[in-house]
Image (tube, rainbow, N blue to C red; front, side, top):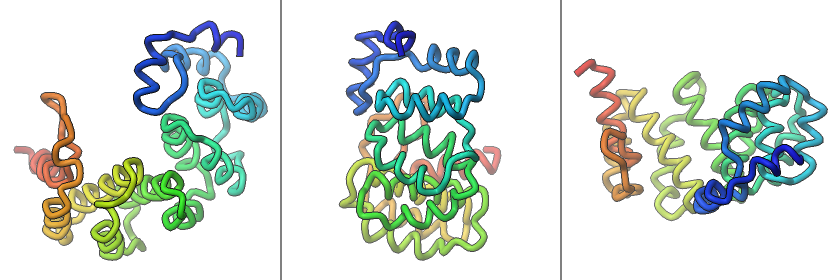
Length: 214
């Protein structure tokens, strides 16, 4: 904890706080500490228990993802209010955990939009890697009905799923494009030059163009 406190950088904190993350530790320095510590599950649990955002990020880097129980991961997601912690928890831990699919299904319809956004993030992963068994039409129905009025984090996660369905499933591409065009979610999102816009129709068309090798 003392070492993490010593890495605190007011400028980094200022930038992070704009995204809702209450820490000021440079993430590459945090990764260097994790590399030195290697995997330590008990230490990870102790770091998590401090409630400190930088400590929790470190915990997610040194933990053993498969060692957490389903209930434990559910509680961790609900406690993790910082977006970066939620993001790393889902991507670095839950995706590698044997309970990932059960949690995905449970979280998808959760009334807490942050928990639901984690369910959508896991669903996007399945759309890309293991779509068999998913009701893609049904997912598009929910996105069509709910994305426009959802809070930011949930809207972003649904939009990602919409784009991945459009990119990976040609039979549903026209519908995905039509939903994106009509709802106009993230249409005006400021996108740096050379980056792909998160606006689903632009994202889908760009990725399809790249896959075609043009």
